[in-house]
Image (tube, rainbow, N blue to C red; front, side, top):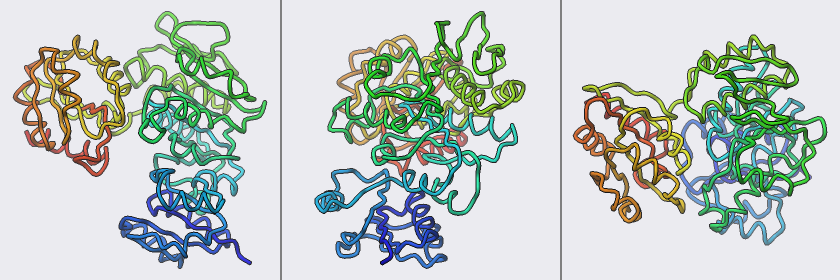
Length: 444
């Protein structure tokens, strides 16, 4: 009898998983509680894959031999609970895709810097002429590419949600940028649960594999010994220590192994301390993949950055406007504020995921000339920042936020959208939030 695969969620990962499942000859069914976008319906219809939207029909789902779950669906969702009670295996799209390719996997996780580092590694590999795909939280789904393309390497950004349902997937190179509190609402507000999810990235590594990590991250240092890591360590840090695979000294970035080389720090395309770490992690990954040092140097110096991550929009009446909509947690905003060179009007707020704003308190006092709270429920922001003595505006739309910032910012200052929060109270996504910000700014 043909094995039945049911896919819950028909976004990028779900549609891709369905395409691969169908290609592998499985009885494939896709179910989404929301409306399915026309683009994904077309993909499913073209391949004669059965689907439903706006509901989960139990008799079409509970008969599955295996379920592939969208990372956006909580493990506490009623249908997931029913499947667990039946003992039905539930996996992620990445886990499923990994079964059908022998490509080398370069996987990146962390609370912040994932997208930039993933994009940077992909840029270096592409520049070196390697046959490489970009997947995970970014680009086309891994499953779709495994079904339709034939890459030798995949550079994959992995969120904790994707890692949650990965069991046998094997990362040849695993990169962990940092761990700070994020998504705690999905982890019973327990930091350890979130940390354990992140460390799943190394769970199947062997002695031939590499684990690249930021050596000064206190949580990584504390947890490192717990997980029986089998891969080789390649730590990076700002200061030179024994065994660093990359470090900074005399304004040069030094890469030590397997090939030793350095480059001037000011040649790096990306500025700010956090981007220094992103560049080091990417350089080590490329070095381990055997890419020539000349190519790594060139690629690290001509990379153009990631949309919605400290993206300069334009200057209006002497005020710089920066879109950092991708900052969906407090630590991300910390990095953004830390890189500001002028007094800053900060726009923050949205769907709070259990945030602790004390991490940015000192930087807000030092760098900010005004705060704009954007969201339906700003009480927590007022409680925390209300005593700082800064001008504050409450807004319910991006247009109002940009207008308030325009009125508040003085010539020579910066307006920074770095919300610390998810976007779902007022926007479709962080991309939608960033696009609206850019449109409103350009219309000033």
